[in-house]
Image (cartoon, rainbow, N blue to C red; front, side, top):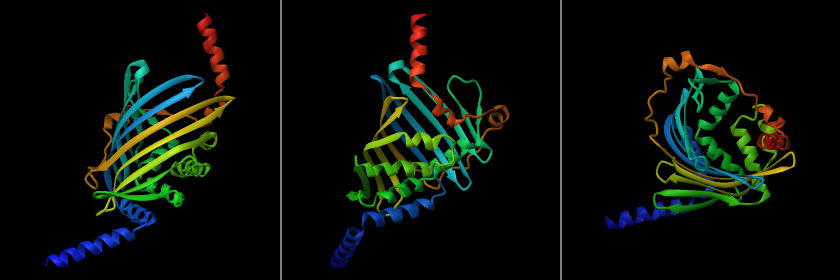
Length: 277
C-alpha cells in the first residue's frame, strides 16, 4: 500500500515537472475563463516624478464582480501622504451603465460609454493571463508550496509590447488613449502570478514597473507597485445598483483626446503668475 502511494506521488511529481510555463499559463487561462464571479483586493503604490516634483499615492481597492452578466461593485480608498488626505470612491457597473460617487462631488455620476468599455476590459481576470502569452521567452515557472509561480521581468525594449497588450485589454477604441500610451516608455518590469496547483485558478499577483513619458519637452516618470488577491470564486451575489443611485446620477462625458492638448509649460507659467500675484 505504501509502495503504491509512493508510486502515485512519484507520478504526480513527474507530471508536475513536465509542465512548462506555457502549459501552466494555458491551463490557468482556461480555468479563469470559466469563473462566473469573484472578489479581488488590490494594493497600489505609485510615485510620480515631474521636474523634481514628487507625488506619492497609495490606493486600496476591493471589488466584487460577476461575469455573466458583467457587473461589479468597487470601493477604493486613496491616500496622498503629502496632503495628509484620504479620499474614497464607490463604483457600480452593470448593464445599466457605470456609476461613481467621486470625491468632492455630491451625488452620483453616470459615465459615458467609453468608460464602460474600459470597465468591461478590466474586470475579466483571464485577460491578465492572456497578456502574458506575448512573453514566452521572458516567462519563467517556479513552484511555491501549493502554487505555481509565473514571472516575467526585465528592462528590455521588447517589454514595450506590454503596452500593446494593455491597449488590447482596454479595447483600443477609447479616443485619446492610444496616443497617450504611445508616449510612454516601459522599463524595469516584474510581473508575478501565483496559480493554485490543483484548480489552476489565479490566487494572487504582484507587479512592479517604471513608466516614463515625454510631454512638450517635459519628462515624467511613474514608479508603480501593485499586489492583489483573487478569492470567493463563483460565490458573489448578483450585483444590483440601488434605485436611488440610478435615479439621481448626472451624466458625465470626458473626452480623453483632451489629454493631448495639455501644455505643461503653459500650466507652469500660469502657476508662476498666480504665485507672483
